[in-house]
Length: 252
Length: 252
DNA sequence: CCAATGTGTGTATGTCATACACCGATGTGT
DNA sequence: ACACATCGGTGTATGACATACACACATTGG
Image 1: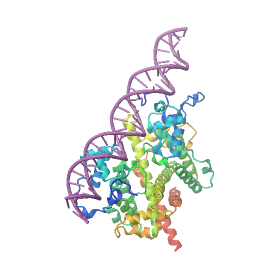
Image 2: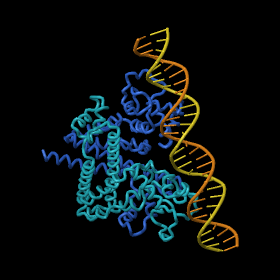
Image 3: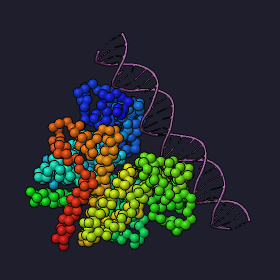
Image 4: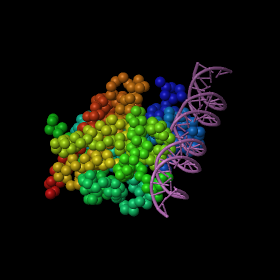
């Protein structure tokens, strides 16, 4: 049952994130989970997620590689904690906006902002749904922002899930695009500003087989502003939510 | 400029996916890109993406590890090709549905289906936007499905992007949940059917700090059907699209 | 005062991606 | 017909990595 080599009482991993051992927070053992996560995040911030190795994290803290395993079950758990810490808490300003729509827009903006500040968040392998305190705080914020819609908790969760899913996917695509752009700049292939994707497609497409895609390329529609793409998508979704609200009111 | 050790003329990677060398397709060299990708996919299908190593792929084909590098620049490129081949072409039935809404629903269903059949697709590291033929075919299908909305190509691409983003994020979350569930079953922690996430949260949450989340837990709202969650989200988005269509018609 | 427990070290193992040198077969240009 | 480049495949080597395991020192509670 014990997942680690350390004895049962020891709090590691996500539970540690929730500060179960805050009671003895003053003791400050030389090496602790928070420092490990912070060091790992620092490394990722300076480069990419692939730069984060147990060895490098340990070296940065002045300990042996294996010392980390007294505080973290394995690398996967460290990454999970990096995700929660890296995404940070939701900005308090979100709930200060007037009206649920404005709040959801603010939510989206800040959420996306977190990923753009730390693209490596997207590289953390997919395991279980996030359960760290920051992630839960985002959920709490999202649900709270929707209270005035009059939707019940089930609908509100549903809406939150829809928006979160969209934002997650949207950021994924954003990161894909920006990495492609970086790569193009680096290899000197493309001098044009954003056209990378359109150009790539134009070069590859066999003519005639994908008329709609060709139309899009020729219309130069791939060169859009990604920030704006996200905002447009949010707008669509919030319109859909508006219709849901109206429907629920009609049902009453 | 040459990215590989092989001389310039050789077609590797994504370009190979597009069949630039179909001209000599009859020659059938003993080892070729398609076989490599197929073997890699087989391995991933039998286990998980982490099981795919250059060595294992090569062994399965009866060649040395290094032989693969004559056909594939590096592992990243292999993964990129696995993504395109693994997702497969869009089902032709999608465009046979009556009405753009039904078509988009079908699109969503099939797209999600591809990810549920091969969850490892989600584990492929994020690089550039997909440019393989299957991925472009999905794009073509999405854009075509929307023609009858009367939206111009820019709006249609926008809508497609919104739906794709949502589906991508939605699948990510679905996979998180199902992996958590598997893990819970394996470790014997949870006997209950779907409650994994709700239970986990209930155990971790400090009471009072996250009232909205607690309300959701107590209402048992986390135990929903994920399939249904996706459908609901799609519904919201399509409602939003409906409003966009109406707005564009008004503008005309 | 001793035994258990917690924390850190050092060493070792197996896996992985990939660089590099080499080699035979297969054309190709003269 | 012959020299030579190219192509496809092999074998060996390297350095990074996660992590198991055995040990050592310190603290602390009975």
